[in-house]
Image (tube, rainbow, N blue to C red):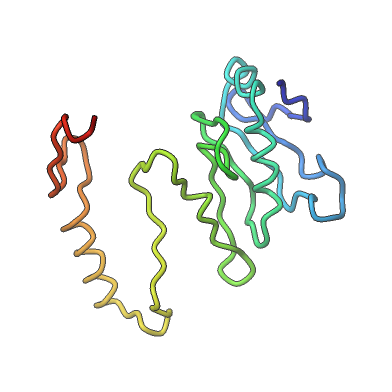
Length: 154
């Protein structure tokens, strides 16, 4: 399969899927353009799957701001392409668990709580962030609190 949709070169490392790629009306209409951060050689590789179509799909989300983007690691994902990036408006937009990813568990989390914006103040936010840093391993060579042997992994 080769993706043959329109792509316009912005510069040596950015290519755009035009906002009008899917027409100007209807549910599939892109609200913003898609921008992919790759060079020409990488773009030819990326066209071999449907990840560019996924960039266009993300551009249809309610409240999306500015662009649907894909970083150089772009490849086919579940909903969003792997390497996909999107920002949505706080009032008009959506939160998409598919944008966070769930296939390789790369440390990004979407957590639902019963907290509302009115429950949060600077002190509570600081306490929550401190607890996250205390309990979630991060950084090169970091280790978690749970130990698993190679035998348990097999």
